Image (cartoon, rainbow over all chains, first blue to last red; front, side):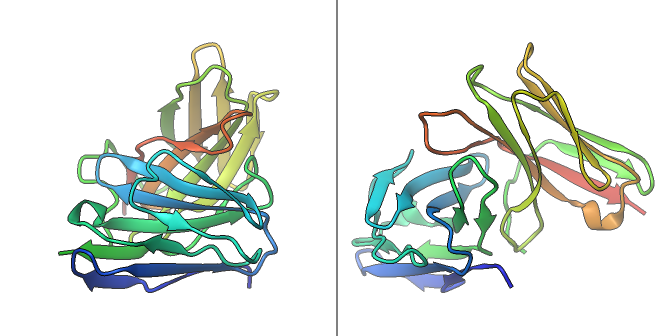
Length: 112
Length: 112
């Protein structure tokens, strides 16, 4: 089954404690992206990757890092999480940026 | 389930009626558009897309209309069913941005 898998689905943690949200896709897609979703603000892009070892900032990259060492994986790293990063996060993938993106089921992060 | 928006515009329809969800996009240079459906607790799910060289495209029970003159996109759902209840997002893309820009969404409620 074609899917984008995110882990964990839920996480409550404290300010400053580094965390990683993993994302894996099994469709051999080249384009991958991370979004955060906040009430009233819709989906905003954090980082994207056009292919392996190629990443770039989206609209709200501050406080986040990503890496793309393999085509299937695109982890999101919060080196020093802060409460304003409390949000619902989605990973997505597609063949190219101008084709339909497949989304994971989301990760709810709460930073206390 | 996960809250995707506390103050989204809401469209309420009776089961069996046709639904029309509208979206105003921002960039006249946008050349690709997508509609997504998001159910509570899930990631956005692709419904239908359209490129700027078309003004209409049909899928199963859904039709997307594009009016480039007024930068307007609409999603028509025929014979709306309770399972269509969700939040619907439009997204636009233009070459050079390398990312989709999402609208804030409309909540569709189907009354039995």
